[in-house]
Length: 221
Image (cartoon, rainbow, N blue to C red; front, top):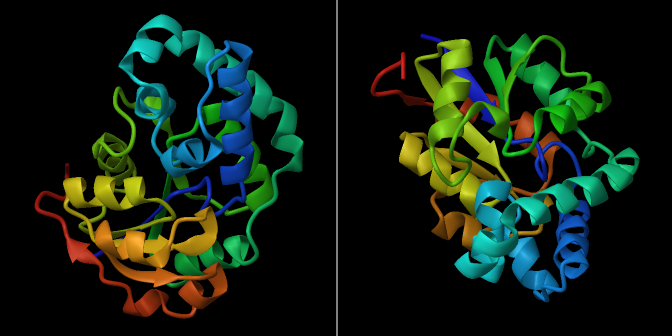
């Protein structure tokens, strides 16, 4: 029976959440839309297809959604060379593959950004999928379902830093593990369904064998 580690990327393996927050704030302000920074940060982890309405309302999505997403991408691209992996990210992925776990990266980000992160992470030969592969991003389960098809595992667990990761995992029928690396509190991650919460990736790496891998209802989902 094969076990699969489904890993979020932004805020979990690479330190991007605050860069994303700044990029979104600049995007909103470029179109004279004022939103508080804390609200943007709390929405990081859901896809851009949902971000605008969640933060500023459906009327802003209808009027400016595509322009805001284009502006966010432009502002984020200006900062992407500042992005660094979290300590232990490379070691976690390599340890998982050396244990015989299947590893798939499931990100609500764009493919070009994940390709950049892969160069930083040097994760070896792992599968990955992004928001470009699905119609609905997290917290919808679509991204995780596509990720599981990439590796065809029959038991899996989701690792992520946001409540949206936990919600997507729950809706996909997966247990989830929370990371504090994205700036979300331990209580919120537990309340969203996380089975455990870790402060850093090296601690998680030391407990890979004890993670709550759950059998999928249909391995071919």
